[in-house]
Image: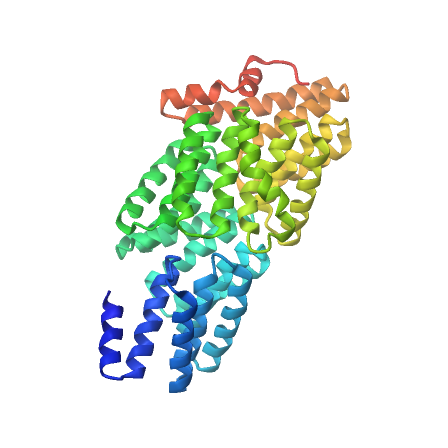
Length: 442
């Protein structure tokens, strides 16, 4: 409202410089929350004013705002604009604007599946804001860095970045930075199967979200919460919360957020054996995969769901085909944190067809990544699957050891679950019960 008032005053006084400055700031705020009314007209107006004034900073800022307006709906286009804006900012000696461009490029490249580019640009942006002691943007840059490191499977680095960002945000009372950094920390705790700490972090994120009132923050926090309940075998609750998160994310009007929501929601449906409902959510993503250049980060959540559905329906060729496509992307882009579960799932398709060597290779890769990334929630499943391979080969001694390793991880997970109902729910999973009973593998 302040920037709108500033624009009105500038128009009345025929002050083009003031009008351009106010419009650019207004568009920045709107673009940040994903809502730019009459975007094309407003953005073109900002660019015309900047060119009329021949002001390098306004021209760079206007170009940056064009990218902000499309960064969620068309990240590939946003990358083009933000590369231009970065060049303009550097030429005009505007390091802070260059830092903004670098962070936005990191986010957009991640959405578009260019994780290596995201890693590079995000690191450069982080150093700019650290050097300038801009604490709000340093916290934001650390949050972005944490997400990228999480996707790479570099959990210790991700945790350190997110904890620093959350600490800075708390010190300066910045709810945006607190919520942003908590997302990654929630994911790390879920992967580690420390659900008590995960829910504590969810509560912190929810408090920040209530202050902000931004649908994106509400929706993504719900998806993490749903993921926790999914791993705890609270399937109806997981589906309900994921659906709620999806409704919030629809307000962002961008396919990538729908894809993230569908990935979480559909997995709860699959595990409830509601395959038709899962197909309604996932089939459009399967059909549009070839045109997913603006949505690959969303597929980091939906790809395992699509693969899991194919496995549940014994469509093993389909499961392998889809896993193949995404594992090639994740390996190329060094996004190994997202690859681990797909290796485990593809191993299931190989195991079902008796391709034991291929299955063992994939499980070994899943184990390597998960150990480094501290993904206990996946490691017990990997050990259980390795036991099945050893049993199929007649190596009963190694099969028993692998099952014992899986059971030990499960007991450790259960011991950390404080809530009795949630612990009982986790332990009620058939595969978990079999491990704890000492059932033979296979």
